Length: 114
Length: 115
Image (cartoon, rainbow over all chains, first blue to last red; front, side, top):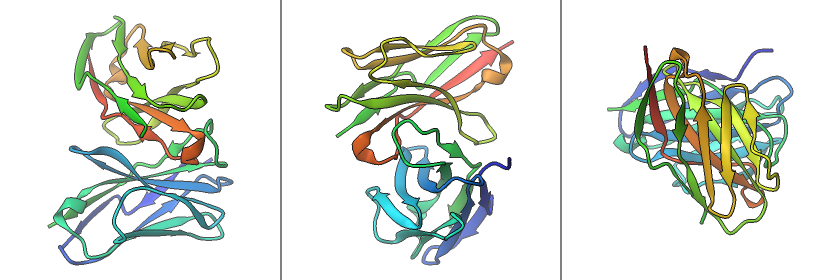
């Protein structure tokens, strides 16, 4: 079974631009979560989607948004990029929601804002 | 608010030895899960072990085991017979019912296994 696939792996953008990151979950998984990882803040939860609906959202500004398609693939979008948005963005999929479900992570997209 | 604290930013251990990584958490929830994730240089996070708060027995997965002290809100990871492939960042994480699935992570411990 293929793992969680994130594209692209690396991205360089200029301040003020917008970016879209993609995540394809493991086949059959319906829950997709996004996390931002930085050296200073560590891993922070962005949002979670289940069955095309946003179920939970972290404490990030409205410039960060996402969506999930009927095939469970998910995209996250960041508009008006700032230097501080430079980070590793990780996507995780789970077969369903729940405390005890294992989250399977992708290798992440490294975003650099210059 | 739920918080997870890993007090050891970096640790090193000799190959074949045992090392323990510390994790404490703060919550008023009674039912929750705790996890240890490993992130090698390849960046892909991998689940190492999980523990349900209601289970008193400590979880074990091969060379990895935990010492779960619920009253003390402590969840340490013991790695026995350390191998070079264990070199990675290790993150302690917490999830409770109210979070609807999102993990709350500690800042991580960078473990280096030396030959």
